[in-house]
Length: 487
Image 1: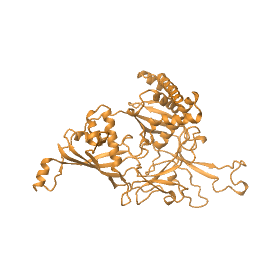
Image 2 (image 1 turned 45 degrees about the vertical axis):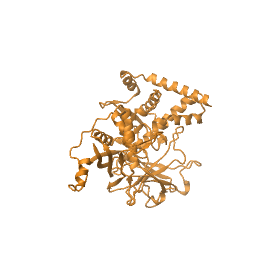
Image 3 (image 1 turned 180 degrees about the vertical axis):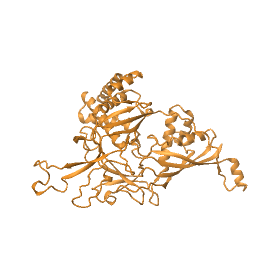
Image 4 (image 1 turned 135 degrees about the vertical axis):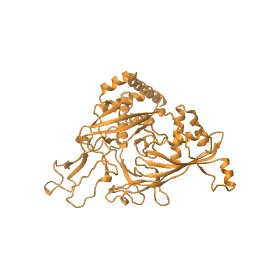
């Protein structure tokens, strides 16, 4: 039995992180050429540097411990009550696990930063939109901005545990090993879209025992803390995540616009692109996990709303009910979702090009400006990534999924549309940009690139796709009947 254990290490940020402070600021103070709006700030310490709050880290560890325990590892359940404390009808009890705020240890250094980079806080901005599932375009007033700590930043992390039994210590290391850099090892905002991924590295373990306290009090040692030289082996903790690698075969140019990389005009004749592709601080192109997740949600919501409307539900109500049904997948303010997507990255060096465009006056049908000369915004260009394959990873937390199989039927519809090339992502979809075909990669690396092959694979592995679809239809019939009775 250890009276106290202290574990110190490093948390490496594998993707941009946003842990909000609740503060908002005018974006014009950050970006000179920005339009009206504000952005959400991250948590900053007294020196104006970002840090990860202890409550965020402790909350993730508790959720992870609970999920592992429900998967069959009963030993980990000790952390749910004795480790993290509880509050119920019987009373309240403090936990034995204490987590400290994680201060910034080092940040990234790059030759070129986006124009929203702040040298004081060592952060930059990212941007997001919301899609209308019915029209497929951006909803009005749904452009938003938020501050992020860049990938590559490192934080010092410290956790302590009181009254730690010898057999419990390996389980603590097992929890920390959950920060493995994957999509499910993510904290903060948009953790389901590949942001906030952490990777843990152990530096030092110190312990206090009854004997070390005695020798310290006797003046034989300067401290009661003793550095542990032999670290116990990590246990194999069972999890219930289903992982899958996917590919996007772009059928043409692809543009997920990133305003942070648009250059300010230097002079009147400057025709530098008004839209540029999304990229990392190192300049590597990417399709953000946020964009992919938003596309999947919009399509799934449209499918559900259509099926509900076919059962007599009016269009507006059907859309609202569909959004509610999707909460187990994509989360809500009260509950985290179960679908995690990484950014999709190009499989080889990407090639970009400029696509020139001319703004047309819709009233006269000619170029804006007409005989008086094209106005300043008539001629413009977009920087797009040319045809290539992108790859990323997806994970499902099956413990959070509904018990019925209806969700499998819904995902099957979405996957079919993606395999057949019916989905598009990013800007310029009406101009032929963003079209792609989905690939699903099996554990052995072989791809599934068409609907027929997927159905054959499911049948070979004992899955009945038609039963999943029927389960979806049956569930929605029962769902609408319950709503009618409740009304």
